[in-house]
Length: 84
Image (tube, rainbow, N blue to C red; front, top):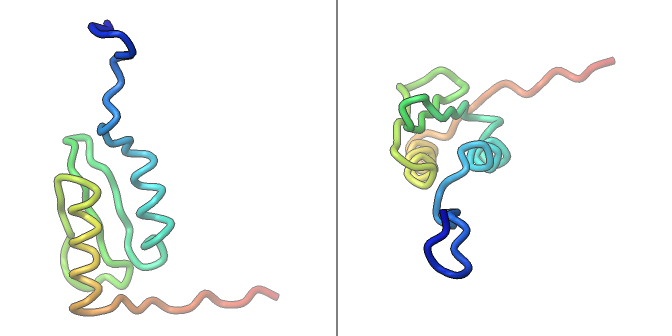
């Protein structure tokens, strides 16, 4: 319930997990699989299967973890086969 004029109860800094995942998938989805867990955490795996999971408490932390992982060893995945 609003307590002040203009206060609609919405937290402008709250993370929308769906939108955050969309942004991560748009940028990194070809080479990393990312998920939001039921426990409220964020996790990603390399699509080439190397290394372990990258876990984080926020989407920003996950993106930093993905970037650090990429900087250490870029992910190489096979190119898709052309369809006829």
